[in-house]
Image 1 (cartoon, rainbow, N blue to C red):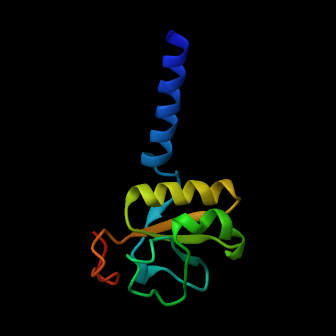
Image 2 (spheres, rainbow, N blue to C red):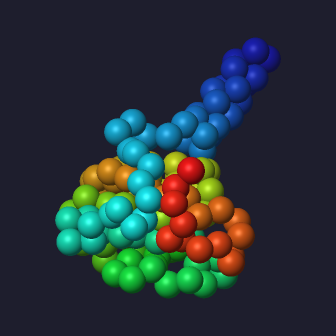
Length: 120
């Protein structure tokens, strides 16, 4: 009886780790400081949240990453996400597919937020 409980606990721990633990080496950057010539800017926010277009960014929501990740250019990535969980899941998926995610920006749940405000 303790083996199924242990396996369930390990499964839940692994899921929590992927969602809540950030990747090492990824740093938070203000979007205005990101050089789009050196990095691919990838916006993984859902379409209903990413109503403000980011110049030079590829808009590919997290839910579409699995089937469309081959469209992303092979160069370092700056990730735009709406929250930390979306950022962590997206960055882990991209890393698993061989991409190098070097930085990120979080925009928050407020769809009216201006992404050019200074980072906190």
